[in-house]
Amino acid sequence: MKAIIRSTTLLLLLALLGCENKETQDNDKKPAVFNDALLTLEKAKQVENVLQNSADNQRKAIEADINSPAPDNQAP
Image 1 (cartoon, rainbow, N blue to C red):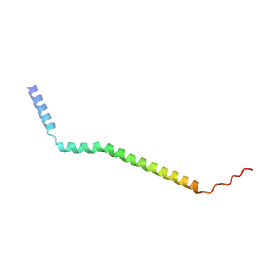
Image 2 (image 1 turned 90 degrees about the vertical axis):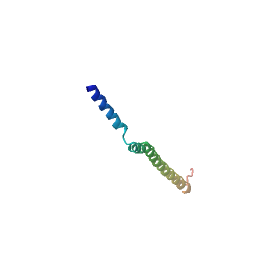
Image 3 (image 1 turned 45 degrees about the horizontal axis):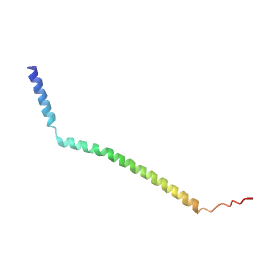
Image 4 (image 1 turned 120 degrees about the horizontal axis):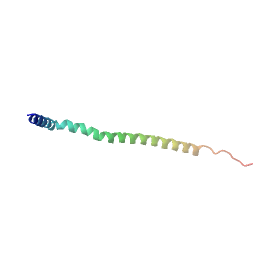
């Protein structure tokens, strides 16, 4: 008798798990899949901004150095 009750309970449990709403499962998985990719893209954009700012500062320093008058270094 206990075996029948256990097997019936197990079958009901499996039936309930099998009938779970598939739409909610699919919707829950999609953001998690793209979440890592979006975070990586955001980090790449931040790195790009840092590199661009550094390049701009270096370019300005070079232009300022080129446009400044040369010092008079005369050997005695």
